[in-house]
Length: 198
Image 1 (cartoon, helix red, strand yellow):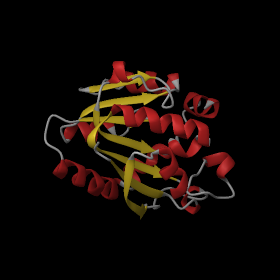
Image 2 (cartoon, helix red, strand yellow):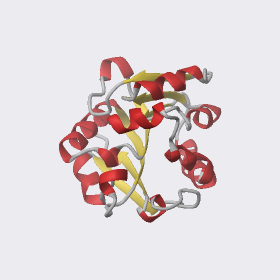
Image 3 (tube, rainbow, N blue to C red):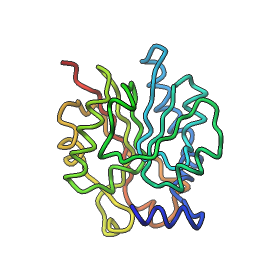
Image 4 (tube, helix red, strand yellow):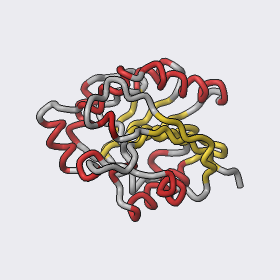
């Protein structure tokens, strides 16, 4: 989105506060993934921005790849020189299997919610092609609201339609402390999906 390129350009990225303000709740979700995966294991951060989740995932032993279509964000992420992190300039609706390889975990914090249904379907297909059997997709997305044109938003139904080869395992209300108004009024939700083997 051009808006994100502009916001990164002026140094304003309030959505990045979530990794700090809700760090404990995010850690609990990652604990569960850690417990269920043997090493080596790979994670793809969809709409990774400047890679705010990379250090924690790498600390936990994940091979980390972040992808984002905002050049300024990817450049900033690479300048951080996070050991073990790879950042790719790319579109989540055009994921290249041959370049990225397979993954055990996909993390999406607020990316899917900005896609229309057609682009959501494309992202779903790409993620599915990159997913190892029983891979997990963790998505934090805003609900549909009156300010959706500004912050985006989605629904459980849209998530299900975009990922038909996946089982929706859980839908949990997300922590909103630290988000501030109006983002705290967007009913952020964690969706956890598992790739159906077969």
